[in-house]
Length: 64
Image 1 (cartoon, rainbow, N blue to C red):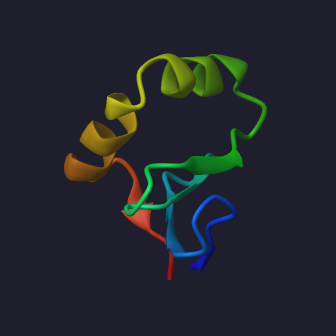
Image 2 (image 1 turned 180 degrees about the horizontal axis):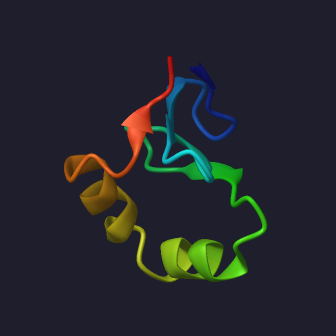
């Protein structure tokens, strides 16, 4: 967990083992590391709902 730069609320980290994403569920902002996968970043920027679907389907799991 870390602080959202946009609204100051706690952001939550998720990973699939290659990518790391931090999401603020208050304002919807997110950022992370793609592990060199540019297509992944482009897809998430174009369709952010894909990220939520990946969390729902346990592809992305909470970081401990």
